[in-house]
Picture 1: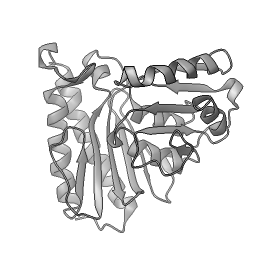
Picture 2: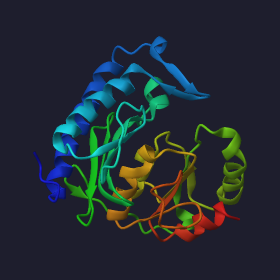
Picture 3: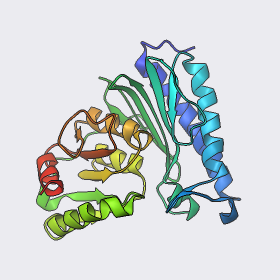
Picture 4: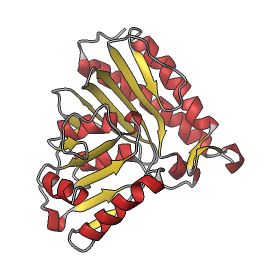
Length: 263
């Protein structure tokens, strides 16, 4: 069993678990049928693939760190009074997966209180593994990641559309009205975990989304921070781990994006 105080070793072990889950998802995609899709809420979908991936991940993480509890999207494992919690999204970007539209990913984080100790995101279609441990930097397949230095007028932003459309519609309309034509460009990629990793890698300069779960953003948020970026909630507080919203940028444009959100 990996020692809990060796975060690097533990992180690399989690990378292997994420890749195994990703390989399962990749194989299932070749024979996936739309009839397998279930509707959790309006526009929010799940399938046996999400659940199968979660079972695989939970089983492996229990062996790696038996004393940790779980927060998982599909609710196949839970927690009691454990000091550490695995936060697992077994398939982030399920709608993308259903439509064979990249990206979609496995996301795993280790949380202790409000501190994120480990973050791993494996993007399945590109076979890219992003990972970080607290104080150790951020990496993609062994290459260290650094956020961009782009200013807001040239920034490429990701403004996602969460499932809770009625609640978020006024915000996204205001954001697009404020930013469209005043920044480099705007994209929507359909995976919170991957939007965060793209910020860490300098592919995106900023990302914002609300009405999402902890499993969506926890791993990616640490990867952004360890790559030199800034992560807050929509109020600008760095205490974001217990909430449902994230603003992540290269740091240079953080205040610009927060000002647009709260204008």
